[in-house]
Length: 193
Image (cartoon, rainbow, N blue to C red; front, side, top):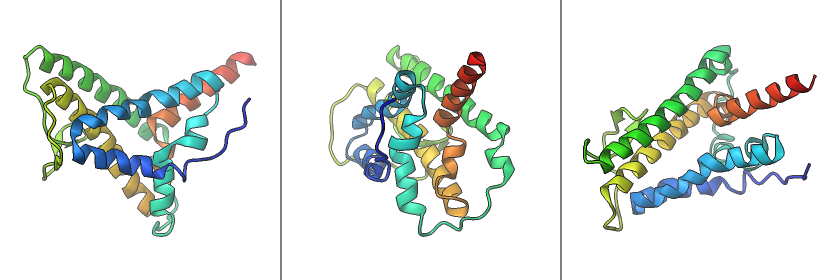
């Protein structure tokens, strides 16, 4: 197994940059697809939680942003228990399904595109995202970008709230990527026994 250098804290700016480029123009958010694909790539290549342990820019942002202001309260078992982990894995898959199918429906002209950020993909946030550069992009791409931005916005806000009250990286204990890769690693080790 290749030895990995922990670069999370050095990559914290990537998460902040993601939110900033969404304000420059929402279509740039499509680059966030890498945040969905890379964790699974590393898992499939190394069968370890390389992304979660060494690379994840969001974990780095929580470390940098919250380490000095976190109340560091004990994390209640309800947060790190199976219910919450399952809830966020289901949220992840339901959200991705909604993103994909709603984008298809927009491309077919059957539903109106969404051009605002939503919390949990349902609740419209009470302000518009500034768009500093105008790009003539297809409405399908704009809709897709707002949906992806909304998914990441939701989980970062939840992560910041949890990290403020509990440990800075409390979100990591219920992050769908962490939960899914942990389950696969346990399953592999059980099969080997």
